[in-house]
Length: 178
Image 1 (tube, rainbow, N blue to C red):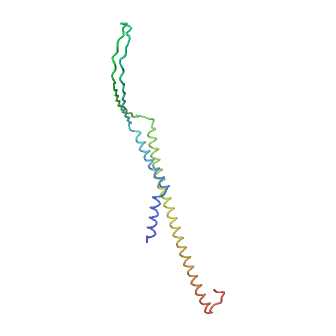
Image 2: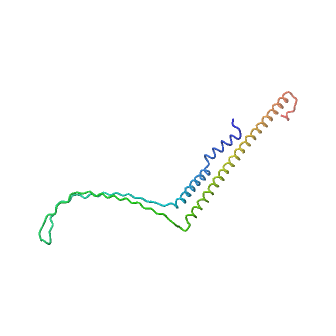
Image 3: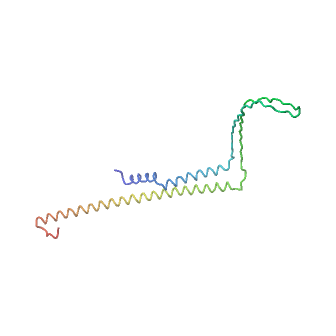
């Protein structure tokens, strides 16, 4: 079988893998790392691009008769053939904040403190999980030893009773002793 230390290590690995508190602390650490990257990103320029496309179809129109008010004559306007209109548009814009009243530096400092706090919280949570597992393990070991002790005492009492019963059968002890 495994040694006590090996069993404790196995129990700790299981606890690390399945502890909801530890998973929460690890996710909080991931989030604060992303926040730190975001704080660094605020010092960089930002760029935006857009691309658009449109298509318009104008159907054919038949010839129509029009009246010219200057010449005071009717004339036939030529029919309009169908046409397609396509429009493309591309734009690129960028922007860089040169000074923001030190707010970006303050945000960066705050994110660093948050990251340090979340690292400490992860360590504390890991230690709490470890302590709980070790306490539970040694509580179990103690209970198992107590069970073995009680079973041993029960066996000794049973042996004593059997010996007394045999002595009574031979007439060596009184009935009250059995």
